[in-house]
Image (cartoon, rainbow, N blue to C red; front, side):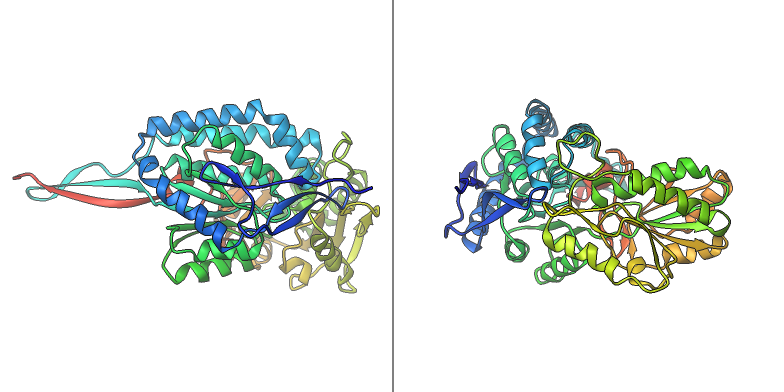
Length: 479
């Protein structure tokens, strides 16, 4: 007996709609490997409709006061709290994440981030007015950009949706947001929540695949394209956006170095790093998955980390003892498995290195040692629960190896030496440097990288300003 699949729909101009041509894709729960819903496979007609709705809604939303936008966002935050269990259920179906951790580690920061941007709406800062030429006064206006085309990833579907829409809406823009084709359920629910608060057309959600995202970025209406995703996807977006000079906001891949010096508290470092490396199955651009350890404590660290990996569990969402759930899809499972299967002869798998079970896309907590700087698994993003360990001799070598990848999103330094920590934070070429911790984020501080990790900032006043444009107004004092 077949089970009827739930029907997800686009949210355009305040209404839920199927794709114009009726096409759909199946949505699979990665914890079971079974389809649970269908979602629209949106095409040109759907993108046109969403962009037209956002463009029509923009003038009125742009002209609302910061206080009105703040009030709306605070209502959205309250609604997120009130409907938290619905959001959790949708996200768990999307991703297979543990229910308890989704409740404690995602809902509170999402609500906090919406409330932060609600406040930011009333705190735009600029240069003071002044007379820079005799008889003339200059002022600077910060204005919304317009319609924003936004594409969110599958690793944190709910939270990345918040990172996209909250600053954009707070600044007075309108939004067309596309979730990943593998994780649309929670974003469709978010559209229902936001649709009960905002005017029609201000926030629109369309489901679809990579081609849908391409149509959004190439569309002439949006003034800005924002994507969180792979380097390949970011480069494609930047190329497409260049054809009509759209603003681009890119948060792409990462390969975070975790530099552990011999004077650190090894047991505590191992405990924290293992969690930061395996959390969310390592499907995090900032995950602590590339560890560099000073040679004098290397063996001790590796043994302790392998033990921690062996004690870490993955499993079904309702199991309260698991740290993480499955990889998101079969292709991601194949990618992670492939990295381990292709390891060079000098590498050693200290723990894990295999799939867990036959149902769902689970992969064991894995630790690999004996690696060299030019090995594939060091240079490329695995995006799975695999922590690599290298041994370095001194600070200069640690810096060279840490910076010696094409990514530059996040990093961490583990030492009791304050001077060394400060030197390393200066020398590490990454958008974030944590000291004696790894992975905490707060709404008030910027998140974003350099090099092939993209450009633009999420969170913070910097992320808010990315969704504004600057206008100079000069007036004559004699008029």
